[in-house]
Length: 298
Image (cartoon, rainbow, N blue to C red):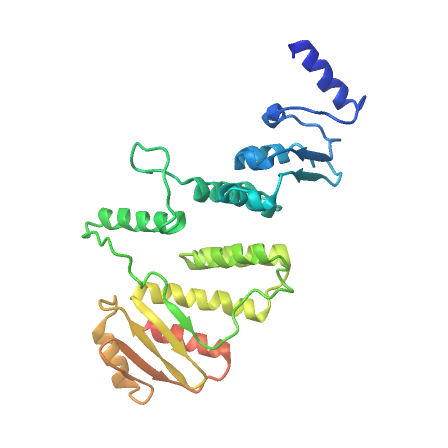
């Protein structure tokens, strides 16, 4: 269409002189029609993820309830990548979805060589998040003058089992996808400040934290301490438990021996890489506090 003809049609549509606009993907460039409340995309499987996201954003730009219909010939005949794109766009409904969508796009298409010249590639082997975590660790080791360890150590995420209910209840965060995202965010927190900020966000969005969610944050705070000390696993129950270290833990052995000599009936070695402890703290909160205090001595 000529420029003037195109301008007239868009102006008529904006002023509701007609109610259906049949067009190409040109509208993804930022058309803002507040009264537009329904979008139908034909052959949505042929569009890219970013394209679908931009097109869907053309409706729902006012207080009206909006609908976006993504049409495909048959779900059974979709290519795997096309199905992933459609699943990703269907799952993104909340504020801040753009960042999550970009991460999905990165996982589907691949990020290429972040430190090289290639612009395409795949990360299916370990995933983008783990790749970035390993890259950050390698850069930090280089800055500190350490010898690079190219193996994935299993001490990066200590396993903690205290037989305590620690979760986001379904009646607190009702959406399953949102719960999964929050679990991931909690697991990736690397500081107590980050955990506190996330707690404040949850209280602001969903209300006061249930007891099980408070335990979830406290256990993750305990995990941060365990990570610093090189602890591989912590098992605990109402009577005691044990702590398992990696082969080269970051603890002061002299302090451990001194602590054992102070309370030999409550703390002792259980093999070359394990400590066994006993206590009479039946309440879950006391159990976590006991372990935090003990780990701080190491």
